[in-house]
Amino acid sequence: MEHIAALLLIVGCSGDLKQCTEMPSPVTVYETYEECQSELEPVLSSFRGQREKLFGQCVYVDPAMEEEDAELVWDIGRDGQLHASIETVNAEVAGTIDRSTTSSVGR
Image (cartoon, rainbow, N blue to C red; front, side, top):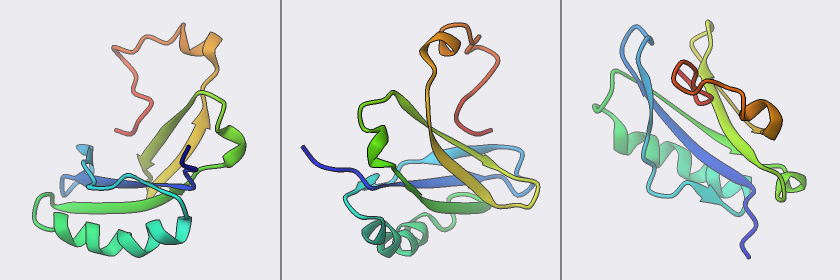
């Protein structure tokens, strides 16, 4: 089984950053963080012109989380930067969330 060390997240936004969506990256998982970092700029370049604002980040995946349920959580902060992390999912809490009004992934 392949070890995943990093996820490549690409997010495209409107100029005012009010509408942001994940963009489909050609490769989303990497065995090393460094490999992901080396692909970040070329992948971002391939999306230029598709959205007014583009953000990209390699998100570190903690190997200790391998057996846990986890989700990628991201947001564009007030500082205009992409903030992303892998967070564990609490099964009891997740079962009570109304998914029609909240999104665990970004804006």
